[in-house]
Amino acid sequence: MSKIDRVVALGLGDQSLDAALSKLRRNYEEELIRVKGKLKEACTKAESLRSAAGERDIPDTDISAEIEALLTQAESELNGKAKACGWAEQILEAFRLRHGLTRMPTAPQTVSGVMVLILMGFGETAINASFFANAHMVAGPFAALLTSGLISLTNITASALGGFLIGRWMDYGKNAEDASDPEFLIPRLRARIALGAFICIMALFHMTVGLIRATESLDVVHHGLSSYALVFTTPEALFLVMTGTCLSVLAYRKGKHSFHDYPGYGSRYRALETLRDEVVDTYEEFMERIEDRFDEVERSASKTEKNSTQALTRYNAAVESCHAVARKLELAVNQAESTMRMQTAQLTSHHRAARGRSSAVSEAKLEHLLIFDKFLPESLPRLEQDKIVQARQERFAIQKANALARLSNHFQSILNVDKEYV
Image 1: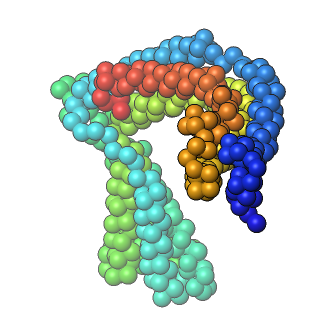
Image 2: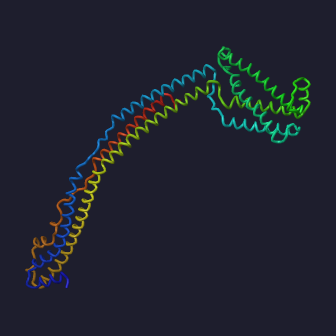
Image 3: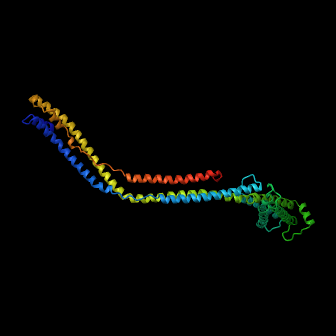
């Protein structure tokens, strides 16, 4: 027999309808009282953790004075380097105007220049070795390569050095308004004299190589008109002289243009570029220092806040558990009221059928029996947000953003003074 059937049987017996309904209600109240007891335990636990969650140990993260000092130092250093950069720019411009230069400096092609010179050396070595070995002037192929390599090394190295040390001064100041000024004229005259001496030395070197091939002897070389005539009448010797001369000219030009720019021009331009890089490096250094300082304080603050955050987490977990039990209680109340109304309607119908309408329960009494609102809690503990930590983090983030923005704005203002600082 079901619960409602037992109540109906009792109601149709000696008990009145309201007594039967009260008994039916007590059956639901037992379950609601049990759930409400669990809710009270959960709420009591949450309340016991409230005090621990409210005691916050929040560290002081105000480093505005320290950051202000860093920003002041950064602005001072950036201004100093920007000023030095401006002076270097003026020096470079004055040098350009003084020497009549209309182009920007060119970067030395050192690596490619060295590679070309090495290839030229190997080429001349191979050519000379083939001619020396063909004339049976050396003991074997290795000796031919060794002798030819020494000749080629001397030729290429001396020619490249001649271009580097002499050639770059040949056009010194020739485009200046006062190109005849001794400041420009004397270096050009010295370069021409040195070039003439260099040409004579290299000509003697190549003629000697030609004489060696013409006389087919590495031991004795006689310099004279008859010997030189022998060079021009020996095709192999003449070819060696012409090949060596061409490679000397190429090495001279490579040494003149690949390892330097106009004398004094490249060094001044590189000094300006170095200062520009220092401005950028200083900006990036202070940006990194500011970020590192904020990150360090943030890590320290987070470590200190960990215990208080854990207490707040435990409290909120207890509050969430309390709210979960409250939801279960509310669901149980709704189910009890719904089922009670349905069973009350059934019980009332049986009573009226057996005893007539005079036995019906009043509406006020019936409403009292059907409502279980008294089991619902009047209030529940509320979740606590970590507003202090959040406020600290927000304030800290704003302070960091403002500091970085201030440094960036100052850097941009320096760049805007002269776009060529970029």
